Length: 142
Image 1 (cartoon, rainbow, N blue to C red):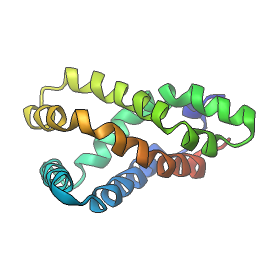
Image 2 (tube, one colour; image 1 turned 90 degrees about the vertical axis):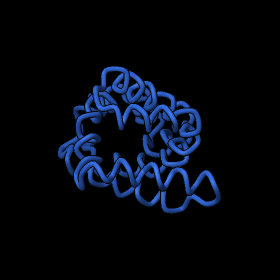
Image 3 (cartoon, rainbow, N blue to C red; image 1 turned 60 degrees about the vertical axis):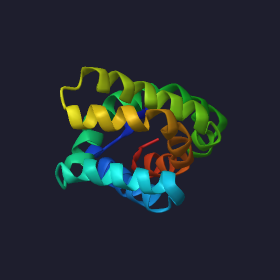
Image 4 (cartoon, rainbow, N blue to C red; image 1 turned 90 degrees about the horizontal axis):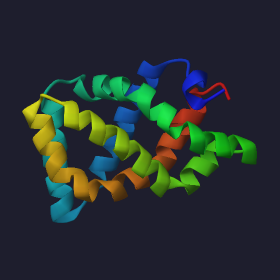
């Protein structure tokens, strides 16, 4: 059974991931941190529930895409640790899902913001993977 089949409450995961994003953005410093905070503020300004709703929509595809890494971790005995250890691979996987979704988006604000941040965001996503792995571990029935 894949990760996507073990998740009981996708909306709860989306809420937890939104909190993780808030925490990650809040820790950013310097000029790039200010830019990220401003950009994130624009996205959050679309609506208070925009980010959790967007994450809920992305979650099924993302979980399916992460299934192979999670399955490797299950074989090794600790999928949370394995996903964390493979954070760059997981970040590439997550970005492939968001890239495909953005290509189809008709929301000019989101497309523009994503285009400006895309090149620099991989390291940020990789840094968040351990937190994501923990969330998935807490919510999966593995």
